[in-house]
Length: 276
Image 1 (spheres, rainbow, N blue to C red):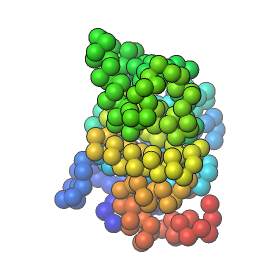
Image 2: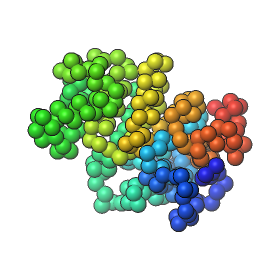
Image 3: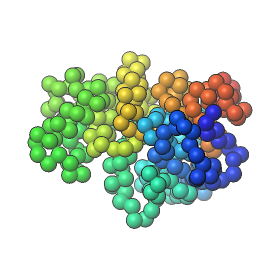
């Protein structure tokens, strides 16, 4: 296993100068000694985690263990929660994303998000996709915007299904189509990282399979972090898995190693169904 960490590891994690393995992709998002508090509640404790470029990293663990809280740190969505405080360091491409001088709007253009329940805007399919590019000043002519919309829908595997329905409301699509529309909307501004918070939990198995297939295709161009309750899904879609328990990152490593040869008893107990 390439980079196993345990809850007992000292804060600060591996040395910053540690040499990556020969086959390892570069680190896109590096977290060191990250702590999150909701008021007095210590939700995440001393998390050290590297998210590698063009990989799918799955965050697994029981409900309330800190997976989604950590995910929301990466695009600073926790900023909008009253009483929430984030400590430690999170860097993207070596840049501190909590630097007071950083433009949070630009950060969220670089880090797209797909939520648990499909949440298309009450607009047409076309305007759902065009919304982000318009805000960020991308696609200034009609032909440019048409191309962005078509490209985004193609990348999300939705173009053939909706190309004759672009003026119809996005809310009129099926649940699985709505979620792919939300993925297309996220990638329309060409982010570098896509966060997915249980993107299949509201979908049927067929729609879930389409989203999983899509995730595998998207990692060629994007770095993806997915929170999932389904260990089977983590095993299918991710190259790297991080197991959270009670706000602690217990263990992280290559997905196959985490599921076949976990180094921590708590990981073993979780993946064999002893708790969760």
